[in-house]
Image (cartoon, rainbow, N blue to C red; front, side, top):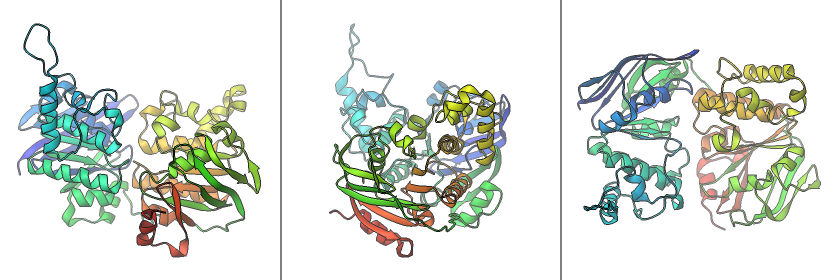
Length: 494
């Protein structure tokens, strides 16, 4: 295979941050290259340089033997570089076809410059069929699932005769079935000679789909490995600079009496159907299920984010009324949401402002207390930043997740709901979050954890409820955890 891309000795300095220090990357035609590293390792910065979003401080980019010192976004597109971002960049109110050819809509001949919709739909349909996508070009993007929206993003890149396709954490919101479809499309593109760069923290995906992987650590190039000749343990050591002996550092504490109970819980959308569950003091309670099982919807009801149609919640055997997130917080319940950027953080505010937002009574009066509190959480949670006044939007995903945690640890909460707590974060940050959970239950708090990663649920939970299509289908104690049993229950329709 020929070299399609070389990035040589790439350096990038931001004010106060040396993000990339002589990084190398090589991509061949018809290859899928994994790009791995902890949050803050420099993966996104490197790819933004390739996509023309950032200019390198120094270094060279060589695409098909042509050398560039820097690129603009338009130049990157012209030479065939496509980007599927983790946060999808689509015009929701436009059709699939209009999104694929946005800014390049075909125009009929004549003086009036009318859009040629017949050609637009025909060309879009041809691209979608090449990718094996069963999507109508006339469908509005807002009506599509996350998986299908990603396919539209890929189709957009293909319409630009993309030679290099970068996929940034594309599987974080996908079911296993949708991930398989995505991988089939990636293999189709590979056969056509497209070079793909796949950014992911999921080792099973990297080993399944990638030919080689390049690993970064703290803004430096560690090495590139052939997936056939390496192990997960070797890659972890390259990523974090040390061996992680226990991926799920579960610590056992004495579990107390029942602290929370939900009886006959239902919502207005038919996503939660007559559910009964309970949580004990100092317990980590897992919820397993496929995408759409109703787990997040159940937790939103408990947090007061959605209205309750039917049912009752009890706290310490006393019936409670939760009508809003404010009333849930007053009852000592907090929710670390799945979508930290849209629902968990104020991205344009500082770390300090985000941490203090849930407990303003003292900090409004005394700026010194606000500073002390924020610095305490920065140190305890190992938030990587040079200042607590740094805007949250500038942090890596793992560090953003720690700010969300700090925000809720800065309250008197007794029940912590973690919805996909390690989504899109690296192996080192995952271990740190698991240890935070351990500390919470050790101090008498209780944790509810939703996760799509079964090893994570099995590794950290004391009990696991399984859900399918809005129903509870089983409850397993730790001694009974088996992956096959949990999956069978998670696909069992009542």
